[in-house]
Length: 112
Image 1 (cartoon, rainbow, N blue to C red):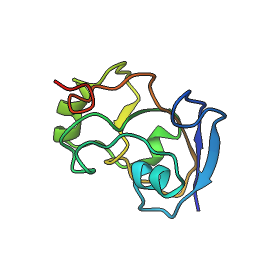
Image 2: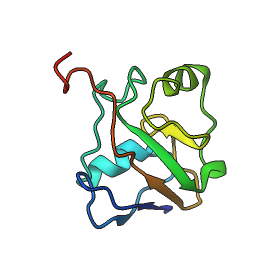
Image 3: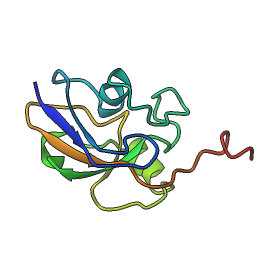
Image 4: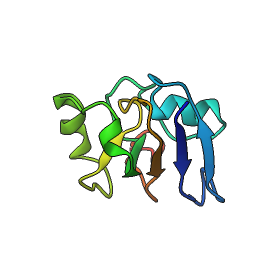
């Protein structure tokens, strides 16, 4: 099973973590299954950017983003070339390292 290394994040994973998940699992599902409660306001339907992650290692082992994901990513806070929506990034056989950005755009949480 591939391993996901999560870099430290002050709210979701203060000390960082390493978790494993079966190939074919989305990064978001793997995080949630391991009690790393990343935001996912649209319930993983690729309709928001709250589960945005930056893939620091292993980007090429993930499935390619589709056009809908790429369009949504344009609205994500702290967008980088290796950004993905964790609900749309599915594991293959290789390990990945991800960083959860410091901020997210969540209009429901921000009471907009």
